[in-house]
Length: 137
Length: 234
Image (cartoon, rainbow over all chains, first blue to last red; front, top):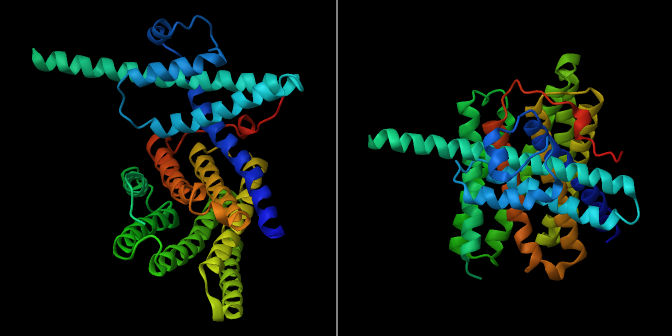
């Protein structure tokens, strides 16, 4: 019983660390992409950064936009990470400002990631539309 | 107990992801570069078909299905150790220590086999699924520790290959989630047929799905600063 408890605690702590690092590695790749004017207009993004609380709205927009379906897994993983950060932000805000600030910066990264995914999907939809138009002509 | 639509769906997603890993790695000409990984995923796909057959023929609660599930799981975990060893070789490739890593892999394999044999010899009168759960839990935990040491080496050596980093991290998530699930089953056996019933298939989907994503989306030349991955409050 003690061995099982020990394995559980250690595994859970390492799971959290691996999962956070994995999500950060997925998000880091999106940081290199610039947001297009088109997606800024659609999502109402006016600043360089995308606010943390925009994430849910961006995901809703993503569901409205057809895509290749190859980004579902990464969006789900980042969605879980965002939920984790959200809970952390709420829990730590009264206790530790540094942790809350870090969680907020991470939430912004998640939102930026969602905005990049939306940008990709908009481009894909436009390509599809262009193909359909050229096909019907 | 009959299979529900969720069981079929989870099986289908897992199997598709396993096939996707092998197909993507062949398409990207990575099959031989990550041979143990592809062999592991290929065998996992075969085991998935075997599990599906046993589930259909004998049922979820049958001894046949349980033995097939737990013992194929233990064998696949041992196969996964070779995948970790190959990741070690990739990380330490510039240090020319591959012969030491090979020696360590052989030592580890024989060590695990000897340990398993000793435990089986002690329990030969009552080889139950409880024993199989304990064995899987221990194997997964060894995997967690090995992957954590590998992750430490990736950070220390400032490894920048996004491809390799994501493959290692996905493996770390899989091992730690599996070990935690098995440990939880030991701690709360009552949860086995409710919440914990869904954990192994969901965790099993994670690894091929994450690896398929890496092979599909991340190019071999992509680079990433490992300092960006460490979660530190400022």
